[in-house]
Amino acid sequence: MRREIWNAGRSHSTRTILSHAWRQTADSIRDLPYSVLWTFRRKDDQPMKQEGTIKKHRIYTTSFASVYPHYVTKAEKKGRTKSEVDSIICWLTGYDSEHLETQLEKQADFETFFAEAPRLNPSRDLIKGVVCGVRVEDIEEPTMREIRYLDKLVDELARGKAMEKILRKQ
Image 1 (cartoon, one colour):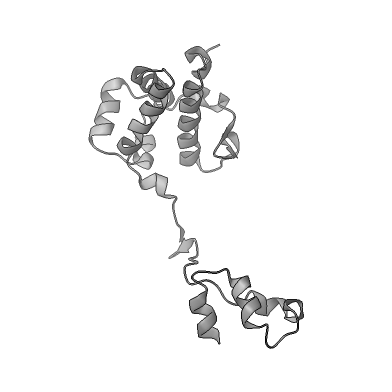
Image 2 (cartoon, one colour):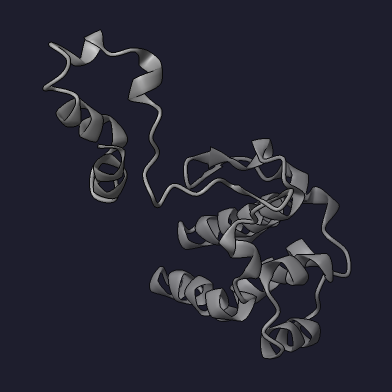
């Protein structure tokens, strides 16, 4: 019985499998002890911890150069320019246009891109709002926060916000 539940767990939730499997032995799923309901895990459930370290989000290993054209396309669809996207990136990271091109050519991942940034703008802490349902100011992981800051700035650009407001100029 255990093997059937384990293999069937690939396509259905554990709770559904157990409710069907134990239906013959229990009058109701409520008659089963809680520990029995949650004993089995689906085969594809993997723990986030691997060898003592927390598994990193895949955006860290994604090449910045592979995402950059999407930033530009998003801005251009709304009537903004590539140079405005570049100025936002340079404002946030401290790169000049020459070093930004170098980072794009060497296919640096996001983690390296932000780690090698010459000088992160101190005014970036003024960036507030929600990206992907998460408030950027509440993100604890520093690199993820920087990535979300960049996403937020590009979103503001695409929405038609003035560059002075996007760059948090007083």
